[in-house]
Image 1 (cartoon, rainbow, N blue to C red):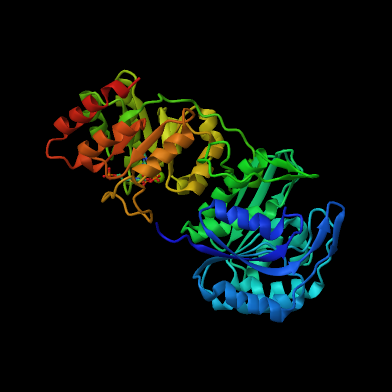
Image 2: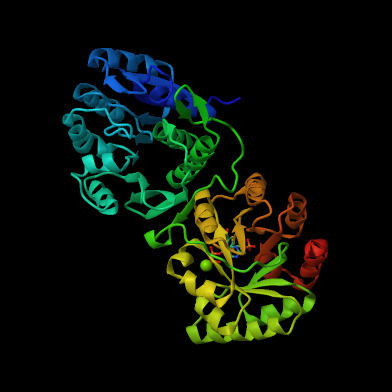
Length: 485
Ligand SMILES: Cc1ncc(COP(=O)(O)OP(=O)(O)O)c(N)n1
Ligand SMILES: Cc1nc(C(=O)O)sc1CCOP(=O)(O)O
Ligand SMILES: [Mg+2]
């Protein structure tokens, strides 16, 4: 068995074992990482408040740190309670020594109140630490402290980015809505992640979220996926919260991801919680050729294909338009055909297509409300957990995962997903969304994928580059015949 990645947990001890390092250690352990705790403070706190921060001396802290790293390679760092400026200075030096992801959950304004951290700590965080970390996870009051109370939170986060912060996840924004919403901002992107607000007041949730993100990064996930996975972990933990003394505590678990745990992701505040309602399509879409001309559509429908997509790239607008109209007309001459148009959603609406297929970038440009109102089905591509969170927010007609195998038909930044990931998507989507596999699928691979129970296999080259496309298509259609319900 390979060694578990070690996560350095810098934070305070809660003598009641609920928040701080105890929550961090439990979280990291449940992610199959090794927790390496580095104590900043031995706090005195009870249900009626915090009476003493109990900061360690800088000397004791640094001696402890040397032991922490003596025998472990640190894969990620999570920082919680920084009790005073001396510990803050030490943490700056520690962070400089490690070229690993660093998550800072700034304990500046506890939701329970009663905590008073000297203002110099905020200053050191702002001036010396923010530019060195991977992600800051403040709540709204903490964001206020760090940004000199700039409003709204989107601007406050942007100000911290302007000052050198790489990325910020503001927790609990839009508290007035029915949805618990976090706001992510980095130089590359901004988005909201939201979930129905759970009623439980649960202790230590900030620690669990930040430690979970650190663990996911230590395991090799990219930041956006780490956030989605950590949010899902926390949601499950809050929903199943257990009562200990006067508190509700997060329940830690290793259960597989479920669709309700995954937060939804959107790029616009006015779409938080919006319920889309795209019509259903057949659950088992079966063999799903993706072709680049109306002629191909005609050829393949004649052979018995029932699901097909017209994917035109780099043709003049007028030509694209006439191809789409021709293909729609052809599809309507055949019985029970699901004909999707890739990218060109406006022309798809005008031509009266059955549906559109949009990738994540396409979703940015598309008017989703217009597509929904037009009654077209919507298929959405996914390649990662955060893209799945985005797709689920749209409640689409089907979800595609790719590239399952290496493909030569399109250059993409994604490594092949493999069958295990496909099976994970299937168990997450369960019966709620048809799942389409795409990328490098030929006849032998389609045969293998059929065993997984996936609802559909989409392909370009296996058909359009085949020496004998008719026999390949017939074989595929025959192979999946009993799937087409
Ligand atoms: C069934 C199916 N799945 C995925 C894709 C890819 O769509 P997208 O991400 O929009 O990329 P382009 O096809 O536009 O290059 C697809 N077309 N069909
Ligand atoms: C267009 C496309 N989208 C993919 C995705 O993963 O989203 S893979 C892909 C190309 C599929 O072609 P082939 O069957 O020749 O591998
Ligand atoms: Mg596209």
